[in-house]
Structures are given as C-alpha cells and as structure tokens.
Length: 207
Image (cartoon, rainbow, N blue to C red; front, side, top):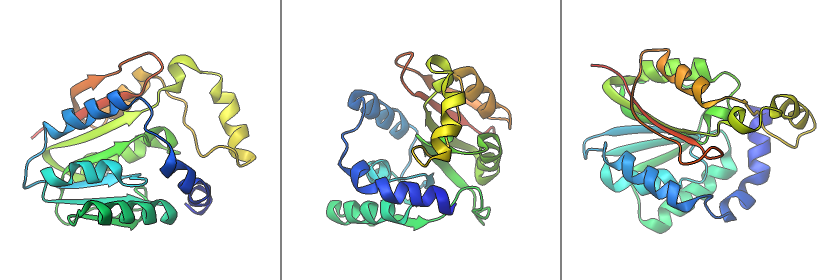
C-alpha cells in the first residue's frame, strides 16, 4: 500500500482541482445509484478519493464509511464534507484488500474508478461479495482500457516502474463483467455511454 499511497498523495492537490470528466455521465451514475438507496442503508465506499460521491449520496442513506489509502486525498474529503455540513460520512485510511470483514454486512459497496487500479480485482470483488448482505448491491465504474487501448498492457508496467503511473489493470468490458459475475453477482444495471467511456455496473447479491 505504501508505494501506491505515495503516488496518490503526490497527486491529491492536482486531482482535487480537476473538473469531473464527462460530467453528464457522472450525474447519470449518481441518479441511477440513488434509485437503489434507502434511508436505513449502511454503505462502504473504497477508493473514495476526495469524497465527492460519498458526500453526494450522504443525504439518501444512514451512514457511509469511505476509505482510501491516500491520507492526502482523505484530508481533502474531510474538508469537503465539513464545508457541505455532511456528518454521516466517515473518512479513514484503509486498504480494501486488508480490510476486515464487517460484523454487520453492508447494504451497498461502491468502487468507482478503482477496479482497474487494483493488482487483483477478482480477489477484491469476491471479498466485496462476502461483505454484502443478501440483496445488497455493488456499484462500480471501471475504465476498460482493453477495449480501445490494449497496448497499455505493455506500457502500464513501464509507467509503473518509473513512477509515472499507479497500478493499472488493462481489462475489457467483457472481462470486467465476467469478474463481477464470478462470485455470484447478478447484473442489475449496465451502462457504457461510449467505447472510450467507463463501464458503469450495479450488481446485486442474490437473497
């Protein structure tokens, strides 16, 4: 976690200033997700970054636990939550790969713009399945570089080695869907607004 945390700590200030790429897509994803939310829900978001999505969903649920392995990103998130008057989101430094299973399963887990940044997405998705209550949801948005930029399979390790890129998993849309289905998830919603856009999926754990 240390090396990856260092990369994102260094980019946190710049990341926080960047406008959201494809704002219309992002707003659609928020709206679709909120269609599944209930006031009594307990959520986990991993790879929460500077906290924008957790803050946007906070008014629709009971509690959100938002984690990231970059403390600098979390500082930005806490500041944004304070400014927005949001009190039901906790931000903490943690890694989904080593996070203990919860005493009470979550109703929804969010992993947005993060699966392609994991060394082993399949293992993480399987863990998410175990962390969810029956009938719970896993919501993800994933860059499928394998659809249009397969050459990144060669470039990504080089960029990682010289410190220019984080871990970057080059996956296709079909590979991401297969990984989500593998533990037993059912696909409740699937959307990819363009060949070069992220794949948005709402997956449900059967009851």
